Structure formats: structure tokens, C-alpha cells
Length: 454
Image (cartoon, rainbow, N blue to C red):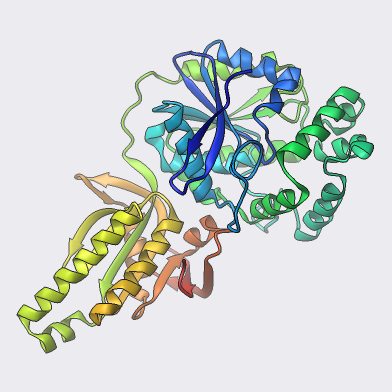
């Protein structure tokens, strides 16, 4: 078994990870919810797959925060943004500058969001099936209704890690392989042991509800790295259709069919899976062109009523107040890892690699400049940002600017995309309905931040 080490995230969480192989290409596995990096090696088919991949690549494995050998959760829920930080910390600790990100199960949403946000850290994207959302919606018919979700969660929690009902639990856990795997006593024993060691029933409920509220669809069009979705030949038509839909949302993505029926890549003929991955890796050029478009959250702020205040205070005093305002804003941008793009008069334009940090930065700015007797308004949107003449531009920037123009004093408005990508973060929103944005096609749903984010 490879050595288990720990990466430390910005917020002090320890993430257990392992590195296998020494090939010229890095592959990082983003597993579905329940993992245990050491106990997975007790599963022969898993070891066969990782050893096969390790023959031509360096494979990075890790447990997400809250499961396996990583730190357990505190009171906060594991947001996609926090999990992106976990993945980035693991890559840093493993010495990986760029990796092929391989997402399986609910790890696909995190994998897709990561490569869209950090193309410079991603050489490609592989998704094992195409689920980037769990909940049913009128425009997402493959999802699960809330009633069905709660029913299934209660049943799984009752069976979780229960050795006496291991066969029944196995059949429920694996929708495709369940009946076959439940007839293998050794696998059932391993699975029950792994469940008990990887997570408690309460963790199962927490992570499952976070997955139910996750929706990474809006990130798919911004993915610019080579991408492919892997599906098994024997999977149900609905699962294949979902994968084909997801592939259609990612520019240049393809669907690759792998022989067999295995629900996870380490079931069935793992040699077929390894060969498909090796062909995909070999198709990625060693040196990729620099990416000029990334998924980012844009923030616009400006002082409300600045003209009137400047007139009342006079030029010298107003200049002093504006300088203090700028110092406070720049300090908070640095604290929340925002990048200042432009400053025009009394307004700021900045970008962030996560919407949650952008919202908290905006809230901190509103509170901080209040001590100067100033009211600031802010607008945020997450979308594809282009580099134009050395500066960030594109439709996403225009949308963020237009949303900011709708805000009132000390008000923070965000697009629906920002709200979707911060599901489970504890942020509170008020739906203001759809609005027209000047110069932007269509109508856009706007939300107001309610309360003061921590």
C-alpha cells in the first residue's frame, strides 16, 4: 500500500491522500462520497485498476473532508468551493502542477467545477457517467425527486455498515451491480467494514443532502480542457442519456463506451477502463495552448451617491475619504483572494475563483466602509471570463456590472448562477424575480443576499 500523507487546506483541514506510480502524467481521482484511501486497497479490483493506471501515470487518491482518513466536519457543510480548495491542496502537496481530473459519481460535479475554474491546473477531464446534479428538475428529467431521495436515504441509513443485513445494503448501494455484488460474501464484508470506517450514518445524511442541493450544470460550457465521458455498454438507457446530455454541454467533449456493466470503474474488466484512459491521456498534447477563458466570479462595487457626498465634503476631504475607501477594499480583496482588475472613480471590479468568497468579500466591504459614512452597493455573477487586451472581459463581466447597477445602498445582488454554485454554504438569498439587463439578451433571475455572511 502506498504511504498515506496529509495535505493542509487554507482553513486548516487535513486531507488524506496517496500517490501511486511515477509516469509523466498526473491523474487525480475525485471519488463519490464514501472513500477510505487505505481500505480501498483491500479490494482486489481497485488495486488492479490503480496499478494499471500507475503503469503510465502518477495517480493521486484522496479522501474528501469529512470522510475516510481526512478530518471530520465541524458545524459547516462541505460546499463545492471548500472541496475545490481540498483538491487544490492535495495537488500542491503531491507536487502536481497539472493533472487529468477523473470524477466518479457525485465527484463529477466537483471535477467539472474544478477544471472550469482552474484550467491551468487541469490537463483534461474524465467523467465516469455524467451526473453533475442529483435533484429532479423540469429541465433535468434524470434527477431524483425529493420524496424518492428521502425514502432512499432513510433506507440506506438504516442499513449503513450493518453486517447482518450486508447483502441487502449492498444491493441498495449499487444500483447496477447490486444483485451481483451481494452474492459475493467477501465483497459484502469489505463494504460493510469500509462504510463503518469511512463515515457514520449522520455523515451519509449530511453529504447526501449537500449532493441533492448541488448543481454544476452552469460550469459545463466554461470547460476548456479536453474532456470525455465514460459509460458502460450495459448501463440503463437513462444513465447513458444523462451522460450524453452532459457531454453536449461541454465544448468538444465526447462519449466513450467501455465494455461491461460495472457501476464503478473498478468493477468488471478494469483492464478495459485502463486502456480507455491511456488512449485519452495519449491524445492530450504535452504542451497545451494557454487558456484565455476561465470560470470566475466577478464583483462590482461602487459608492452610492458619491457625487452628492463629494459636493458636500469638498474636494480635499472627499479625496481623503475615497483613499480610505480604496485602502479598505484592497485589503479585503487580498484577504478573500480576490484579484483587482480595474478601478474607475469610486468603483472596483475584481474577480474571484469561488463565489462564496466573493459574496463574503462583498459583505465585508459593505460593513467596513460604513465606518467612513459610505454606502456601497455590489453585484456578482459567475461565468466565463475572457482575457481581452490583458484585462478580464466578456459577457459575464457585462452581466456582473449590470446586476451591480440594480443594487441599492448597502445591497448585494447576485445572479442565479452564483446562488446555484453556493448551495449548502449557509448563505441566505431572497429571490427578486427576473429582470432585463441592459445590452444582455434574455431575462435574468436576480437574488439579494440576506443577512450578513460570516
